[in-house]
Length: 178
Image (cartoon, rainbow, N blue to C red; front, side, top):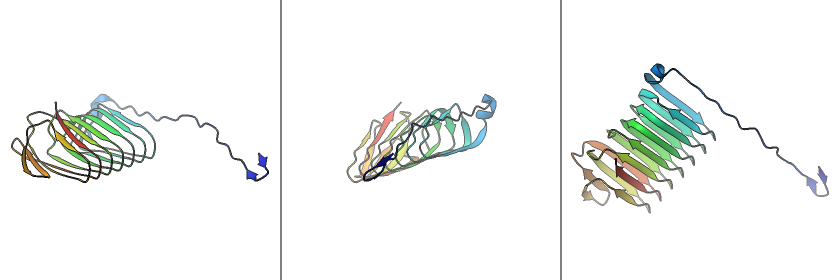
């Protein structure tokens, strides 16, 4: 539409698009890896086992992973929130402002999580043993499991066998027992 001072542009509402992939359950339980890459799509993964890794890369889309088993869960997000539950042996995540919430029925052997302003929430078995190295500028660190403090940034829980490392600027770290 022509206006005295220039042009006016309008946008029509674009239709919602969805891609659904279904695989037989015996295949879903025996995968080596699952890799997804998204800009703004919501990712939902249910009942998948990957002996090597499940890798999620997203910009602003969220991800919801339910009843998964992963040798390694690798998450990279800018502002999308991620929720995962199942059995996760290793967790690696990088986030700018998206929150990472993971509940694992097994204690991860290794955890490496970095966040600018997104929160990291981890729920693990109450008998877990780990050594936590946590650095934050203004975020808070809380842990429901009993820990012995080695220094301001180092805490040991149980036998201290698993390596947990987190770095945040203003994001909080919360570890809960299930």
